[in-house]
Structures are given as structure tokens and as C-alpha cells.
Image 1 (cartoon, helix red, strand yellow):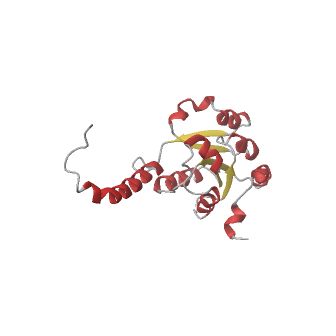
Image 2 (cartoon, rainbow, N blue to C red):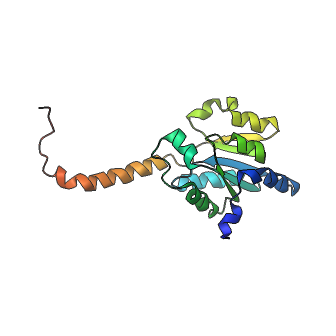
Image 3 (cartoon, rainbow, N blue to C red):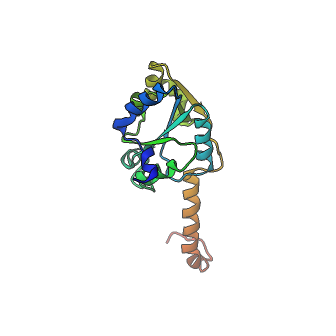
Length: 184
């Protein structure tokens, strides 16, 4: 078995992982996301999350979960590729693939000491979320942190890549266009 696969935890093993780590007095931190194109901001975020405890477990949204939330053209990379990439980061101890858009079921199984999420539009009312209620019910804490890079995001990377490609594809055509296109 490849070394990274030992750090990939199935949903059915999350409860056992949590119990094992708590028996060793380890403080467990959990965070989740798509992790489609890992960039510096995400790496900074994971380092910040890891600093809040002894063990960082990262949830990776499944292909199906992402498609349901972000549409049929996402994710770009398969869930197993995204999960494997995360295991190579020094801040990440374990990875689990999340079958649902919400990580609430995983939080209930793992019962981390700390759940960290990034400040997004939906986190304005995060104390009303199922995730917050699940974590605080058993005595855990929820921390909302700011984005760790305001100038880089997966969406911005994609827009730049697609824009550059379209520019290359259309440049030959564009040199012949002197006048704006007009209605006939």
C-alpha cells in the first residue's frame, strides 16, 4: 500500500480515529473543503489550522458533493487525486473524503476539539449552521479564520488559465477584426 493511503481515513473509521487520538491526549483539529487546485493561500490556511492542535484531519468534498454545489463542470480533479495531494503537505495528518456537501456528519463521527473554517459568505450566520451546533454540543470549539490569500483563489487561477487559452485561440481571428461586430 502506498504510504499516503495509510493517511486516507474512510468515513466509517472516523469515530475510531477520534477515540484513538483522544486516548493519546491529542488535540484534534478538523477542516474541510474542495481542495481542487491547491495554492499558497490554502497551504497557509492548513498551516494555521494545524497550529491549533496536535493532529489535523482534512475533509475533501467528494466529486458528487462538489457537483451538487458548484455545478457540473466542477471539480476539476478527482476526489482521490485531491485527497492524495493533501497527504503530501506537512501540516495534514489525515484526510477523509466527504460524501455530502456538509461536513456535519464527519464532525459528529470524529468529534474534533476544534473545527476551523474559512470566512465566507455563509459564515456570517455560522452559529446557526448544523456544523456549529454539532461541534459545540459535545464541547468542541469552532474557529472562523480569514482567507489566507486575497489575491489567489482556485476561481482566479481558472479564469486566468482559460482567459489565456482563449486569447491564444482567438488571436489569429482577432487580428483581422478592425471594426466592432454590429447588428445586421
